[in-house]
Image (cartoon, rainbow, N blue to C red; front, side, top):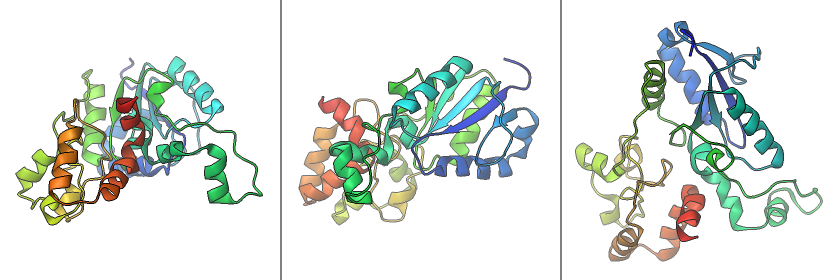
Length: 249
């Protein structure tokens, strides 16, 4: 890799909030712009170059043309990073997988609109080999900067492999489960500094599951906290639909 590596950002099915977080991050760490060359970033520049070594991909794959585009990116890039929940694990887009595309289209657009040529939303890693991922919805600014610095130094970006509950304890947060609120903190990857639970909101799992999550134990804990099954299931489906389908299937 050259002394000043070329970086490109690509968007698929997403809100592009993670790319906006990247823009905010780089405004606070302008020194990084001196050591890299961004050749493609639709959210921030009009120029477009196809010569890049590092590719950040935001959004899930939902169409055949997405696959073709991902394959071209993988062929060009030496390193591909999935940026955010949608690229990492399908994200909220995977909620659509619970029903037929035609049914979802009719609900959103009405019956007079032609059904889109789409299929089940899936993470980038199910189409191409992804070297690293940065989780979250949106991603954490500090985690993004740390990942970029690691790559520039020839190191692999490191992510926590423990649950959000650990960060909750460190912040001395009151457990929202004891308040009767559904929370996925015990099975969700840490790294967010327990921001949601610190505000009294149950974790929604936007950073994905930890390795070997104890889902059975979570279900028991929610039951003991008298949290309705429907509420617990809705909480898990928001971000984890695709990951949980992989575990169940």
